[in-house]
Length: 551
Ligand code: 5AD
Ligand code: SF4
Image (tube, rainbow, N blue to C red; front, side, top):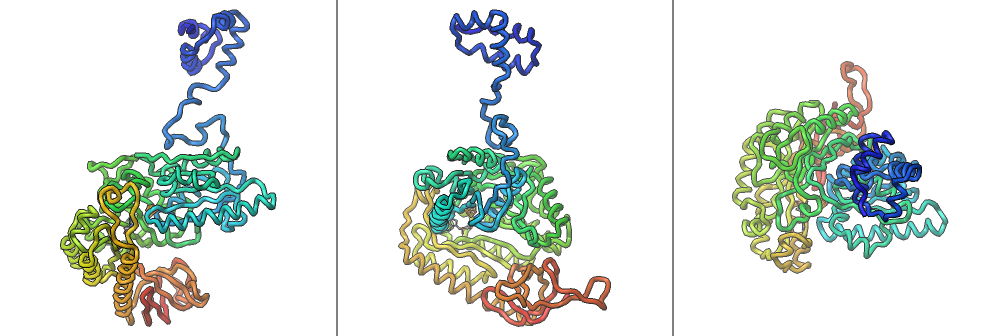
């Protein structure tokens, strides 16, 4: 028997409840009640008590699941997780690309505001969050091994009766890709959070308090974390990353990123500029803008799904970014070679604080392989682009990514990759053997038919060629003066400092002094964050070195 809606409204008004309660009561009409219950409810005191009980209980909104990207912790009244951290210590283990470093800084910002602490000592951690990479099988294997180690550490802590039980979380691309497998294979994992669900982490961590496994791997069309100011993992570093977009719609046939990170979306301009201003105020001297495909989007002041209308183009955004503080060096990665914007080249020429270094990921030097990869350009078009870039920016440093052993790659096709590396003479290259990924077009359409040992041999040949080229490019720098941003001590010696030149090449030089600004008669030690001019005296295939530095 259904309760009459009108009766409920009347009863509500008699108890002088607010419109929200009346609204909630409307849903009582769908509750099946027995005749006896109905009579009781409609009779005086019992009726009042019953209604009060209902009205004071959980409301309808408590049972409606909002989209995850809207679900802030304070929206869950029965789970007070706003203060849930209780100063528990989190250890971050970051794998993969620069985007993952930046995502970890977003996660740290969220957890810090919920009273968690960060520790750099794994043994001391209450929670270990592993930021994962899924791009190649090798990257995933490393993480499975890591989980084994963490399991051992947790068991040791349990044996020693250390409480609370250490929690282990898998974040990022692998979480998104392997949720079921992680659960089946890794019963040790407590939290699985994909790249778009970091705002949900306080709630997920709260759920694990009762030793339940908490998962959120929903991908979003508009999550850009625009409202979160990342907290840097190393707050003393003079360099920082700023994400300006998320996801990728390119669908290169070998690549898993569109499946793990979801659709392309740009971050609102105002939040990008605010973050830059904040980093500038903190004394950061170099910022790298991050995104999977920087050209194709428009940047607006609102969170948007991909749009080709209105808003700023990448070149306009870059100009705004460069103008925030001319003392800050700007880098960006990665534009796509299939439609590289000319305006960006003009802008680099005009603005001295935009580095003269470009990442132009070629992937292969053979047009057939590029077509199978669905890259959208040929070898010839790529070489034309490089020539055009060098006409406008003669001193530009070019870097690239290459994959060898892609499906069906013949020896002749691979030799085209070698000849492209030879022709362009990259200052930096990231070289990978192909690794077949589930879900990708290549997985559905092609055969991973280049044997592993041939992939490895081709990789060695690429590395050998590339190293030789870089060695000779770096040797040409000997005798030159280079502007270097000092980053800190060299890894090998406390008597040397390390920094990077405009082309992003590491420069090592002895500790020393520079004149104090506005008072050339006194000096001070060279510090991280200083720009200094050094003369290059020696070089290797990794870096250039000097025996003298000057301010
Ligand atoms: N196998 C090997 N390398 C890959 N990359 C992307 N997907 C794969 C894959 N399946 C490389 C590309 C890309 C870089 C980030 O990783 O070169 O530019
Ligand atoms: Fe970064 Fe790509 Fe690895 Fe994801 S899969 S962490 S986007 S490199």
